[in-house]
Length: 376
Image 1 (cartoon, rainbow, N blue to C red):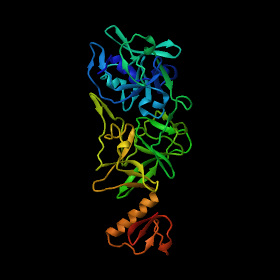
Image 2: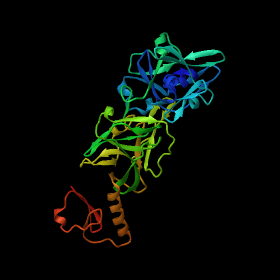
Image 3: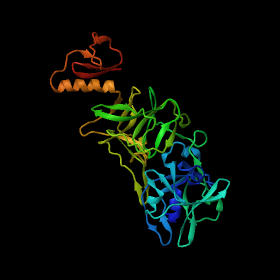
Image 4: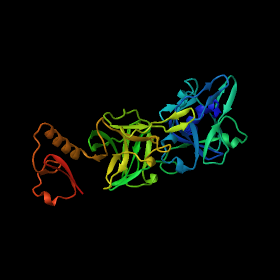
């Protein structure tokens, strides 16, 4: 277990502070000068904190070398908030102040050339935060070091050029690329061709997509996104400070974390009876389906961090195809007729129009004698 000063713990979670001093409150990434690795937040568990010795368990802070590790990673996005002469850093549903047990904020000291030292002071003793000097792409933070370069941090504001945030789809359907997202920041769409949805209806075999057309997508909202590209650089979004409430009536659930680090285990275990994950069927239609091992984190056991899943209503089984309002309403109406014994004989479109010659049906979904029929 790595132990680091409480001050260090606070400073890590708030990587964007340096820039915040120059540009005000906002969203940043924090990059170490010596290692070039970026801070990410792996869980929000508060480990053992010793105020008298200025130490704290900091195993929830992971550093990664290379922009590819963070370009679409919500765990690398940190909101910097000035609190008097100090700062609070917020990320992944937690903050430096919370992790420090509500006892301290972070001090930031400029060292020139856009480099900053992160530290806290207790009883006259000041400790600064270092990234470790190991050469691996994955690293961790320490409370001391022999190379001062590894105690310098850069605060990089999120932008649409060299420090962008892009959506990374996970599946490709016939009408575009899809993925899910659960993040603690609100955001706006920057790139063209992005659509954002949630699920507001569910029945056997299908669930209803509802597009979110507001300019700002609320924070902590489990969503499905559709893009025209598989490249995050073409799917840019911009985090924004906004207090809009998360959307109600959403059948999607999400998680920030999938951590199995010792004493920092925080994850959602996958349950095939109550959960479905995003996928495609044989017709390349987007669905929620039973997860394969490759869809899950930690050797196929857990929902991946910052993603969403569909909660299955008790009694429903199988896959759930994503449909629009018109298609979902058509099925609902037919089901309602069946329940009261008034279903009509014949073949109908989902909008209720009778089809005269069912022998020449085009591919699609129809209602025949009160039952759903799929023509491929």
